[in-house]
Image 1 (spheres, one colour):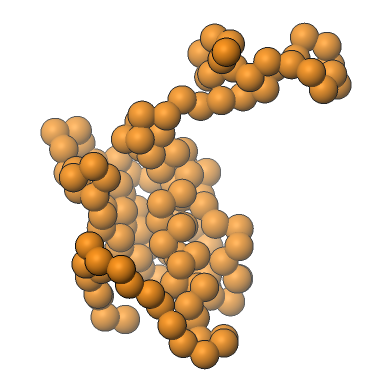
Image 2 (spheres, one colour; image 1 turned 60 degrees about the vertical axis):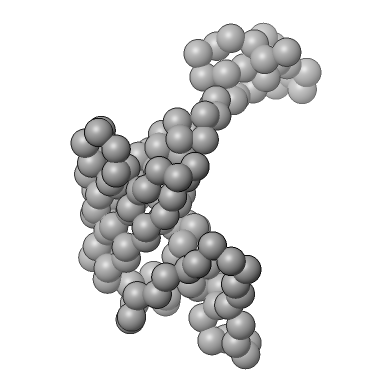
Length: 133
Protein backbone atom coordinates (compact mmCIF):
# COMPACT_ATOMS: atom_id res chain seq x y z
CA UNK A 1 0.00 0.00 0.00
CA UNK A 2 1.31 3.43 -0.85
CA UNK A 3 2.03 5.97 1.85
CA UNK A 4 0.06 9.17 1.90
CA UNK A 5 0.45 12.39 3.82
CA UNK A 6 -2.38 14.20 5.53
CA UNK A 7 -2.02 17.96 5.35
CA UNK A 8 -3.11 20.35 8.10
CA UNK A 9 -6.40 21.03 6.34
CA UNK A 10 -9.86 19.54 6.39
CA UNK A 11 -9.88 16.08 4.83
CA UNK A 12 -12.19 13.10 4.59
CA UNK A 13 -12.11 9.46 3.65
CA UNK A 14 -15.03 8.59 1.36
CA UNK A 15 -16.08 5.48 -0.56
CA UNK A 16 -18.98 3.09 -0.96
CA UNK A 17 -19.88 0.71 1.87
CA UNK A 18 -17.50 -2.18 2.59
CA UNK A 19 -14.49 -0.52 0.95
CA UNK A 20 -12.24 -0.25 4.04
CA UNK A 21 -12.83 3.28 5.38
CA UNK A 22 -13.45 2.09 8.93
CA UNK A 23 -10.54 -0.33 8.71
CA UNK A 24 -8.13 2.50 7.86
CA UNK A 25 -9.38 4.49 10.85
CA UNK A 26 -9.19 1.44 13.13
CA UNK A 27 -5.55 0.86 12.11
CA UNK A 28 -4.77 4.49 12.98
CA UNK A 29 -6.46 3.98 16.37
CA UNK A 30 -4.44 0.78 16.82
CA UNK A 31 -1.23 2.76 16.33
CA UNK A 32 -2.27 5.50 18.75
CA UNK A 33 -3.62 3.23 21.48
CA UNK A 34 -1.50 0.10 21.05
CA UNK A 35 -4.61 -2.04 21.03
CA UNK A 36 -7.74 -2.35 18.98
CA UNK A 37 -10.50 -4.84 19.68
CA UNK A 38 -12.81 -3.38 17.02
CA UNK A 39 -10.56 -4.19 14.05
CA UNK A 40 -12.01 -7.22 12.30
CA UNK A 41 -9.92 -10.40 12.52
CA UNK A 42 -9.90 -10.69 8.72
CA UNK A 43 -8.41 -7.21 8.33
CA UNK A 44 -5.96 -7.81 11.18
CA UNK A 45 -4.62 -10.91 9.38
CA UNK A 46 -3.98 -8.87 6.20
CA UNK A 47 -1.74 -6.39 8.02
CA UNK A 48 1.97 -7.14 8.03
CA UNK A 49 3.58 -3.70 8.52
CA UNK A 50 2.27 -0.35 9.75
CA UNK A 51 3.97 3.02 10.20
CA UNK A 52 2.23 6.12 11.51
CA UNK A 53 3.92 9.51 11.85
CA UNK A 54 2.41 12.48 13.61
CA UNK A 55 2.94 15.54 15.76
CA UNK A 56 1.57 16.43 19.17
CA UNK A 57 1.95 20.11 20.00
CA UNK A 58 4.58 20.41 17.27
CA UNK A 59 6.70 17.49 18.54
CA UNK A 60 7.07 14.60 16.07
CA UNK A 61 6.55 10.95 16.88
CA UNK A 62 6.31 7.75 14.90
CA UNK A 63 4.90 4.31 15.62
CA UNK A 64 6.03 1.43 13.48
CA UNK A 65 5.29 -2.25 13.91
CA UNK A 66 5.24 -5.56 12.13
CA UNK A 67 2.30 -7.85 12.70
CA UNK A 68 3.16 -11.53 12.45
CA UNK A 69 1.18 -14.48 13.81
CA UNK A 70 -1.12 -12.06 15.66
CA UNK A 71 1.73 -10.34 17.52
CA UNK A 72 2.66 -6.69 16.93
CA UNK A 73 6.39 -6.04 17.35
CA UNK A 74 7.73 -2.57 16.84
CA UNK A 75 8.94 0.76 18.10
CA UNK A 76 7.75 4.15 19.28
CA UNK A 77 10.14 6.95 18.36
CA UNK A 78 9.34 10.24 20.06
CA UNK A 79 11.69 12.36 17.98
CA UNK A 80 13.03 13.92 21.16
CA UNK A 81 16.19 13.37 23.17
CA UNK A 82 14.55 10.32 24.76
CA UNK A 83 15.44 6.96 23.23
CA UNK A 84 12.98 5.01 21.13
CA UNK A 85 10.94 2.36 22.97
CA UNK A 86 10.57 -1.14 21.56
CA UNK A 87 7.55 -3.36 22.26
CA UNK A 88 6.49 -6.93 21.63
CA UNK A 89 2.88 -8.03 21.98
CA UNK A 90 -0.36 -6.13 22.41
CA UNK A 91 -0.07 -5.69 26.20
CA UNK A 92 3.37 -4.09 25.93
CA UNK A 93 2.33 -2.07 22.85
CA UNK A 94 -0.72 -0.74 24.75
CA UNK A 95 1.39 0.12 27.79
CA UNK A 96 4.01 1.98 25.73
CA UNK A 97 1.39 4.00 23.87
CA UNK A 98 -0.65 4.72 27.00
CA UNK A 99 2.37 6.07 28.86
CA UNK A 100 3.46 8.11 25.84
CA UNK A 101 0.04 9.67 25.25
CA UNK A 102 -0.62 10.36 28.93
CA UNK A 103 2.77 12.07 29.29
CA UNK A 104 2.62 13.95 25.98
CA UNK A 105 -0.91 15.18 26.64
CA UNK A 106 -0.07 15.90 30.30
CA UNK A 107 -2.92 13.75 31.62
CA UNK A 108 -3.21 11.82 34.88
CA UNK A 109 -4.38 8.22 35.10
CA UNK A 110 -7.63 8.15 37.07
CA UNK A 111 -9.19 5.26 38.91
CA UNK A 112 -12.08 4.65 41.27
CA UNK A 113 -11.58 3.80 44.91
CA UNK A 114 -14.17 2.73 47.44
CA UNK A 115 -13.55 1.81 51.07
CA UNK A 116 -16.38 -0.71 51.05
CA UNK A 117 -16.29 -3.57 48.55
CA UNK A 118 -19.09 -3.21 46.03
CA UNK A 119 -20.06 0.25 47.24
CA UNK A 120 -21.19 2.57 44.44
CA UNK A 121 -20.12 5.79 46.14
CA UNK A 122 -16.38 6.27 46.22
CA UNK A 123 -13.62 8.64 45.27
CA UNK A 124 -11.97 9.27 41.95
CA UNK A 125 -8.21 9.00 42.49
CA UNK A 126 -5.11 9.58 40.37
CA UNK A 127 -2.69 6.70 39.89
CA UNK A 128 -0.59 7.77 42.91
CA UNK A 129 -3.63 7.47 45.16
CA UNK A 130 -4.22 11.17 45.73
CA UNK A 131 -7.97 11.91 45.71
CA UNK A 132 -9.22 14.14 42.92
CA UNK A 133 -11.50 16.94 44.10
